[in-house]
Amino acid sequence: MYFSPTESARQIQILFDLSDQQAQIVEEELNKTNEDTILILHLNPNWRGHIYVGAVYDEIARFGMQENMRRDNGDGCFRWLFHFANFEDICACRKEIRRQFPEAFAHSPRALSAIAAAQAVAQAAIAMVLPVEPMAFAVVIHKHALHQSDFQEYPFFYF
Image (cartoon, rainbow, N blue to C red; front, side, top):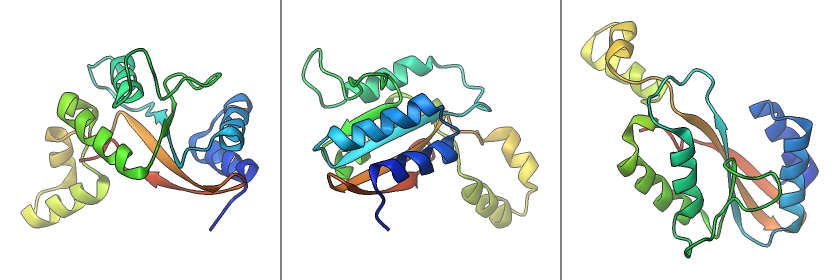
């Protein structure tokens, strides 16, 4: 299903509880960019990791870029909205972030359920051993034309 930039921004605002200003930034970025794919991150308020979130976001921003260039250089986009040429670049970035910052990733609830069922162990016992909260949640917006896009939740910070 394709959405206008305004509708995409509104849907993402609801999903991530973005401020009106952030939703406006999403809409403006969708209206002005020729790039195909945008990654939007929203810090998980329940995450209790011990790594510096800014370091992870900075690494995403600089992944594959020339020196002194960033993927999040639009007005108000710093460390939460990242431009990529295509979805494959996001996948490569995710792989590198997972290598550098494995503690930012968590097992998905679906994986935890499968592990619990396979081992016949209570999910609560597994949750005490395995991380269950990812550092952040992600949405990927695929641009199809200047005024058409679609988006999907993306398990960027899940194993």
